[in-house]
Structures are given as structure tokens and as C-alpha cells.
Image (cartoon, rainbow, N blue to C red):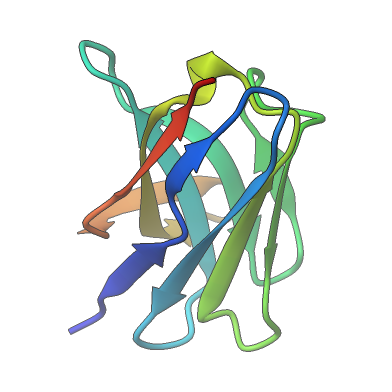
Amino acid sequence: QLQVVESGGGLVQPGGSMRLTCTASESVFAMAWYRQSPGKERELVAILTNTGKTEYGESVRGRFTISGDNAMNTMYLQMNSMKPEDTAVYYCNIGSLDYFDRFHPSDIWGQGTQVTVSS
């Protein structure tokens, strides 16, 4: 059964940087990062496909970078210029791509990793 595990969360000061890692139990076609803050809906952060296509949520564009290894079983999220509003539990999702190369999340989620941005 396909599984994913996130790691790398913690506490960082505003303006600082942090890198998250998502490891899947096998190679996949597409992976994504989502995040959820208390009282808010889960939000898309970034998507990575096995063709190298990336996509970012508006709130993180220009500050976060998603990347992965060639085998597409490990994904990273480099977060720079972090803000207090980036505080959330970050989740990894293994999804699929349709004919138009659009990402569709699945019900395969990691346990999440807490990221806190605070001075």
C-alpha cells in the first residue's frame, strides 16, 4: 500500500527558511504539499509532476520552491522569507494527473508536520 511520510517541520523566526521532505514508499507521477491552519480549510501549497511541472499557491509563490528526486519518490519544499501566516500543519499528498496534466489529489496523505513561524 502506497504511503507517504513528511519530515522537517519545527519552529522558525519570521524571515527565516526551512525545508520539508516527503518520502513515498514508491515512485509516483505527481505529489503535492498542502497546509492547514486551525479554523481554516486545507490549502494547496505546491504541486510537482514527474515531467518537472510545478505549480504554486498564490500565497507562497516566489517564496517557496518545490522539487524532487529523479525517481519521484522524494519531494522537498524549500520555504524562504517565511511569515507568521505560514504557520500550519503541512501535509504531503500523492495524486494523479489527467489528460490535461492537471493534478487531482487522492486520499493518500501523510501524518503532517507542524511548521511554526514565530519570534
